Amino acid sequence: MKKMRYIYVVLITVMSISLNAQDAHLSQFDAIRVKLNPAETGMFQDADFRAGTQYRNQWGSMATKYSTSALAYDMPIGKSGAAQSRWGVGGYMINDDAAKAYNVFSFVVGGAYQITTPNDKYLISVGLQAGMIYKNIKDNYLVFDNQWSDGAFDSDMPTGENFSNDYKIMPEVVLGVYYRGIDKTKKLNPYAGLSFFHITNPTESFMGMKQSKLPLRYQLNVGTKYKINDKVTLDPGVFAQYQRNVYEINAGLRGYYRFNEILKLNAGGYYRINDAAIILLGLSYKNIDFNMTYDINTSSLKQYTNGKGAFEFSLVFRGTMKKVFNSLL
Image (tube, rainbow, N blue to C red; front, side, top):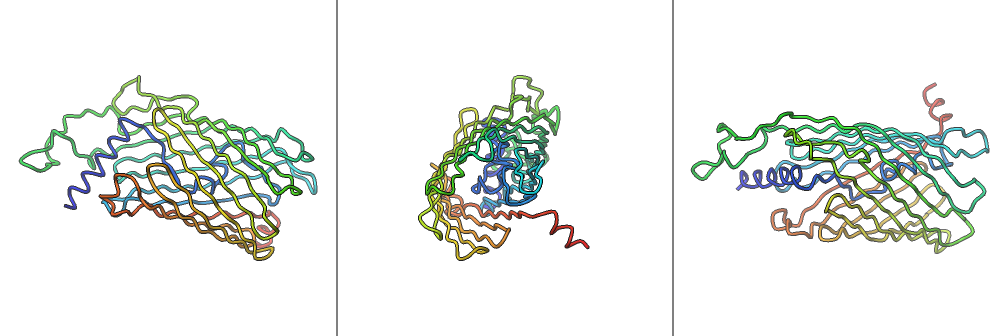
């Protein structure tokens, strides 16, 4: 039974490589803003820099787990005293490990520019990122139909497959635009972001097939911050992405409760259509944000996972250079 579970996961991996070419997804899609949309790079004024990490572990109940990890850093530039910055720079790296058989590593850097002035009641920014995507496949972890013999798979038998390369390096270019209401006198401040990944549409085939291109991914997030009072804020929102003929839609609500100036609790839930219910719980203390999510599988895969989904956490730190230097002295 354990062997069959492993084979099942491998088959899912091969299908995702050859058919859908989907990027990794994260339940905390907005935890690391520079990864969500390049137009949000450095678009903050309450700190000198922002650093974050994120980790996701899923399908461990079936066989070899799928894991995704990310690191990011961004900062405003040109900020001097009380003068606000309209430029931001930063980047991120993300590693997606699919059952040890297939791995994707991305590294990009970029910048953003705030089109609106600091005196406006809303923020509009644009951003651009560029970098690379490294994909590799370990065929010794895969099994193929030619290796099926006498009711079992024999890994010593020839696969009948011919991989021209076991890795691929591709350029990555991402564009984004972002809008956010910043009027503190209003209870309602909407936001919306649109970004485009894989602008160059690079070739991604391991089989030497020139017609196999990495498809463009469209990503949209919309919502609004609704301030009920000085302690409670609600944040309903929708996150959607589309790549080739595959789509993903997350919709839900998050609530924030501020105990005092340094401590804030947030909790909520999202539903990823035809896939999972997501429970979120987080805490902000001073300049540190920590969030955890758990996915409850609702798709047809739940009969193999016993309803178990994915565990994910994120940690984001906002700091000032002065405090960093003082801590080093």
